[in-house]
Image (tube, rainbow, N blue to C red):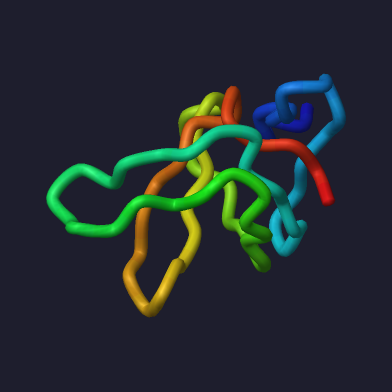
Length: 73
């Protein structure tokens, strides 16, 4: 039995490790002074144990993003 969680973007598209995603909204990053702008492409996402979150690197920092703010590129 496959225990891999189904992770989907805001449009219902299935996301997998290594996908590129685009932000659909400006996001302030907690604990950092940067704001990720709408339309920013984030490459090489990694899935987490939570099917509503993905891990990624932005400007050298590792952050976790909610899938409700992402669409598959």
